[in-house]
Length: 384
Ligand SMILES: Cc1cc2nc3c(=O)[nH]c(=O)nc-3n(C[C@H](O)[C@H](O)[C@H](O)COP(=O)(O)OP(=O)(O)OC[C@H]3O[C@@H](n4cnc5c(N)ncnc54)[C@H](O)[C@@H]3O)c2cc1C
Image (cartoon, rainbow, N blue to C red):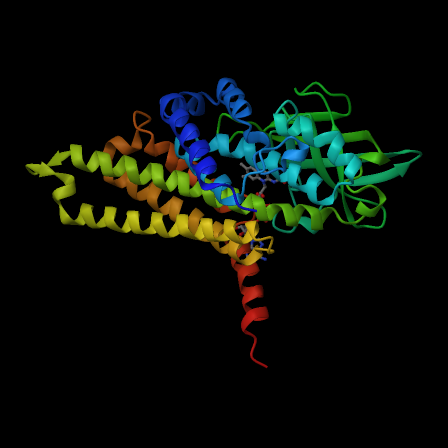
């Protein structure tokens, strides 16, 4: 799948202009107040971004993944949390697209693509993050329903979502995905919500959600009966897209950090000259620009592989690893280049510094990416 270059450029430019005019000036206010940016999310809906990589036949824009990565970079250089609102949602759309039945695609995707319905992805638990198979949430059949009991952790979009793609164990001890339909808000029988307070990545909700005897019709099993036991497979397959999103978000934060430092270094004077004219600072910026460029290329290279329809676990894992570590490094360097000012909420670099670690953790930590990469290296380069 490839998007016509002119169309891709137009969409990216339109979104970039909006980010400059509406997102950049307001992001810190929403993030510091931990307030959901309703108007920004409405605008993303109007752009069609909630279905951007989903085929047009289901109401999406059918864009390729490189264009998706470019869009997420633009949005995240303004406000990384907005990239998170889209990420969980599009992971769920992709799971439905790849693993749902045709009836399920037709039932759920059009409203998801318009953004009228928003989705949350719920795999992790308190004691089951990297080790997802250790989950204890249960789904037990009862008549035409399954009954869900358990506590899921870290549910991005959990409060505002109408659809939660929930991974739970069926009595055969295999993981199955159920599509939970609920009203937006925290007032829902049989589900209690607890907001997680965070270091950064604020302005959107991350929830703990506890299910007590929550009934879900058997027809909401993703993929219908054929989906039994395929929940982890579906989740991990869609996390490929999630890793492109995280890599692109990291590129966005890395770029914002670099651009802020570049501007500041040309304004701030010490010892009678701009700090950019101290070679130590100019060299730091040279390194930052180089790493930013490398990160973007890795992200696009992984996205291209997905566009070619090739399973891209290795490339997506490498991109996610390199881009997220680069974002953390550049955010720290940008803060140092800002001196004391970088440590205040007057300047956005403190936000980049708090936001960057999320990309190292979410969608599999750097250590887990290295495990995935190392495993695949042996497949590729094994010496007998
Ligand atoms: C803000 C936020 C939002 C999130 N949103 C979602 C969401 O929407 N949906 C969802 O399902 N999840 C979500 N997550 C969960 C996220 O994916 C997990 O936090 C992540 O996978 C790590 O799991 P953990 O926190 O349990 O850490 P652990 O698995 O406990 O890891 C702890 C440390 O041990 C390391 N480690 C673990 N195993 C190994 C190993 N075998 N070898 C070497 N090192 C290892 C890890 O790298 C890490 O450094 C979110 C997390 C955060 C922080």
